[in-house]
Image 1 (cartoon, rainbow, N blue to C red):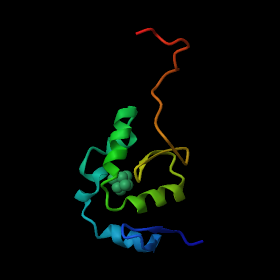
Image 2 (image 1 turned 90 degrees about the horizontal axis):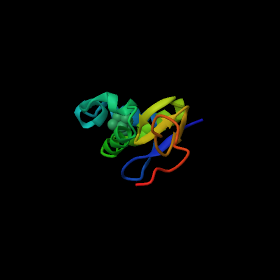
Image 3 (image 1 turned 90 degrees about the vertical axis):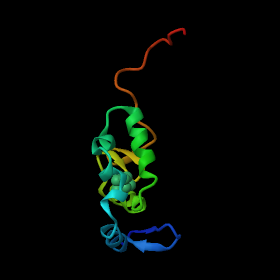
Length: 105
Ligand code: SF4
């Protein structure tokens, strides 16, 4: 099976071609390498959302997301999406159980 993704110009590239492109990109242009990498595996939902936003500027985001989907990443932010047990989930839930009764404000 050949996996392909679209680059920024809408052209279809194979994963191999995208890997070649990623190797040519300066690490400083990849937010997860120029910021604290712990953000991409943070416990705090707000930190996770911040990491997802930072990914949006990454020049290899399509490649990163495709690779994470292919590997079924167990955890973390990859390609601007949050993964849990190999699938993309919309957002991280805060720790602890939800309240049974809403607290009046
Ligand atoms: S898209 Fe991937 S490589 Fe780029 S900042 Fe996000 S996690 Fe890092």
